[in-house]
Image 1: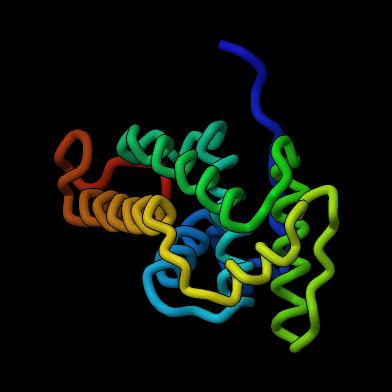
Image 2: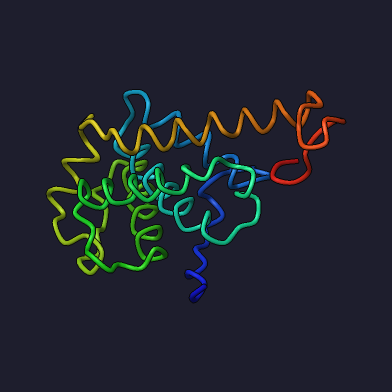
Length: 173
């Protein structure tokens, strides 16, 4: 089967007051990448996509999602790495940390520190965060995750889940 992927942790301020970081990350990324958003919002959402792309590989809660969700997340990661000038082989944790640092700086109106070992093309990173460059794979993946989240909730709370008797166990409280 192969080794497990590295675990990626979000900093405490990534999703304020979230009982379920996975759920909140899904809703936040879908909202951000499917409308006009600020550079800081895009930096935070890109960090959350990186987190989700890594998370689906090992978190059992993803078992209820359509299998194509994983491929869509992988495509979004590739697209975001190219658009943001992220170094090939950069660790997922370094990408999350760098994007969250950029988010905090941009929220304060400051130029973000972009570690060169993660962001090999800082001008491309800033241009992508500052524009509404179409990111079709990212839009697709974030929309798909949101639809799947709502599908699972509907099945669980309407009695339409596995067994047909009220919910299907698992992914979300």
